[in-house]
Length: 474
Image (cartoon, rainbow, N blue to C red):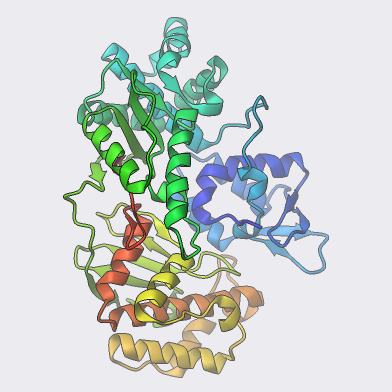
């Protein structure tokens, strides 16, 4: 079984919502059972659908909302709600068979394809894509025929698909602005011209990631699930017309050398995209001369009571903050880069626990084990870690009082929460504090921090594989 993480709502949210509506609420869960969700007006699911269509709600805001709200389940003796991370992912992630009808485009597909079209339009005409271009017959014809020649955008790569993107941009001027700004940056920074082609989910892209994954698999002797996006998180790839791809390579080192060489020559370039705000930044990652080692600075002390939240923060010398917490029940922690100057990204429990086990020789208990502890034992662990991290004591009473005063979005106090949510709160804090304790007090703290950040930000994985060069607009 395969579960969703919260950061996958941007990619799969619309597909999941459409599927649930089409199936009258029925959805398969990671436990193998099928549940019927409440989808009527006023339900959590109905609110979820509204949020998906709300262009003013950022994906990070929707992720946070999802982490605190589970879907109500009908006609179930053993389950009253189903969280996003308990939905079976493979139903949606399985590749469609050749010749099958394209699924409804989600916001990510539309946004990334729009960036391809806007950049191609700027390179071909020397002009920005405008609202008028999205509406007039001549410009629509040009975009769906001439521009289509230099873009390859997977399921949306047809006149109908491109028209769908144009209509979406017309309805979402903020995304049109992001697409145009992205196009200007890419054309300038990568020195793009009329001979460049733009790829999103194309066979050209898939072949690149197939080759990289094959090489990574040979290097992976610790059993971590390492996807191609950790080697290169390019949402789109840009290639010179005369270049068909990378020549056959024997290993990842050889492939990375080819990627770097062709990136510098503006022949083939992977680019990671984000929705832009008032300002935009361009960065190139994994160049040979870049520093990849990160130095630990501190564990951020909670501003209020220790138990006001279930997270902890690691801080680097460069100012990057790494939030450590769970994102739902029945899950272990994830480490997410939050620093304002960071590339962003997450490292799951598997990677974090691997780094700590390999370097510090310490096992981090999983949520299943922590859930079986008595409240007294949970408190003792928190007190021990607090003392090791901050050199001070925290009383049992202050921990209990803070926990019992916690309320969820529905206004329910901690003692009224379902047991799984109570267990999650305790295990998240204990795991996060244990990780911070080990890293802070290890002589090899910088090595552990470097592994976590490098993986989360797609900079490669220390002692296993090097990531490839890519550009990012954010």
